[in-house]
Image 1 (cartoon, helix red, strand yellow):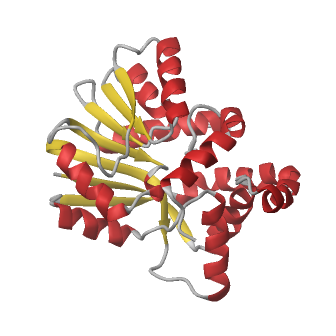
Image 2 (tube, one colour; image 1 turned 135 degrees about the vertical axis):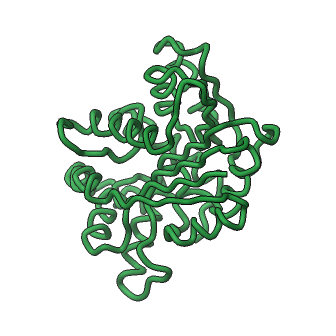
Length: 270
């Protein structure tokens, strides 16, 4: 089954409450020394991504697939840079604007309903394109081309997300991966080498990849345990056709344990 843009919008509308419980940063956490909670780990991941990308207050960051603005607001508040967030979900735009005002960074950030494959921004508009657990939904090569277009000279593309550990899956491995990805309305993952090739084809001159699976595995296990009380929702899903993430929370853990996927940070420079 190929998930559509509308499927993704519906999924986030249906699961808004659950994501609010997780916090404004809808992503895995980075667990290194001093991190004690998932919310701390989520913020730590923002810090790590910003450091890898070398973001300073002089940058203008495009948060591609910004959710409710967690990363954009974080960057504006902690670094002082400008940030523009885009999402295809109208409700997320509204919430992101509210959260930015509450955080006191409304003058530094703005949010728009827009598809990151085909934005309305002029060429060379941004110094950084940021995608944190949003590019898994993309037509990857198309997204990388658009990121290259909107980046200025010496601009950087930074992605934190799940990556396929191999080019192809067969048998029970394929079934496990598909059950996981379907739970989050994701069509497919690509390998780090795929992203390197897409970036080279688009015109990026330099790429780097960091496998940070060991630092996010605690979140993977936490998601698994969180899913256990909600497994009955899996039955409800089959009856009323509402897409709950319970299956994904369960299956991502087993797929990671079997090394079918990895979590990485990918950087490309113009």
